[in-house]
Image (cartoon, rainbow, N blue to C red; front, side, top):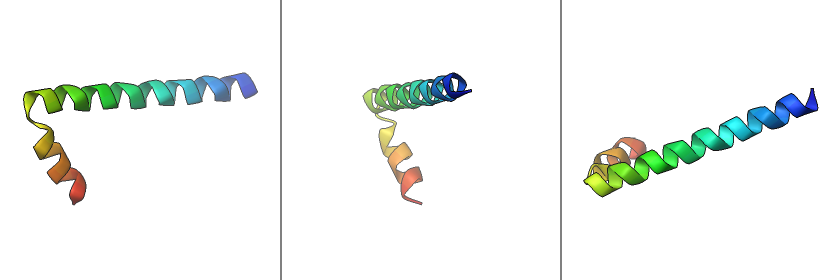
Length: 41
């Protein structure tokens, strides 16, 4: 059971890393301003 929880945490960290990487790509394309404006709401 504990091992399953660790796996879930690993998946969550992986998803977060993927999200951050995606935001970096958007920033490179100059779309990050739209993302930041959306986050401020």
